Image (cartoon, rainbow, N blue to C red):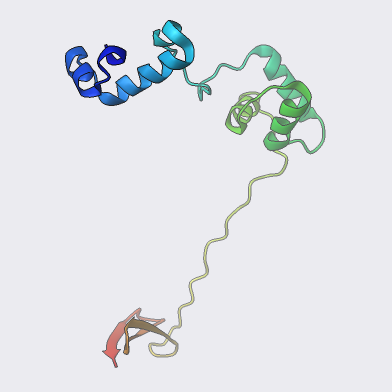
Length: 154
């Protein structure tokens, strides 16, 4: 109908479709003919929940036995040597499921040291901030009582 009338609005109204759908179908028809009008698969090219087969699992575990091969290096080895594309998350899941120990223990975060003086007014932190052109905010915080004084000056 669109080829005969050459009117996109009329064709869309009569067929009950939108203009983007009409453009998509005409492009596919020009490129592929009637085969292009058949519905295409909407399957994603990558799947986050992809099943990892036993052969791939054994290959990951055998590569992990080599020294200093973590998940990222195993991913590179699989891609370069075997042509297998797996995400780092999938490789990490395989290693965690197999209870393989990490290359090094996780870092322990230190708790921040809070500086507090026993006497009020012994140590005061001063901050200055430009609020607007020619206007500054001054803030003073006492380390003992955490008492805060704020003032705005030109």
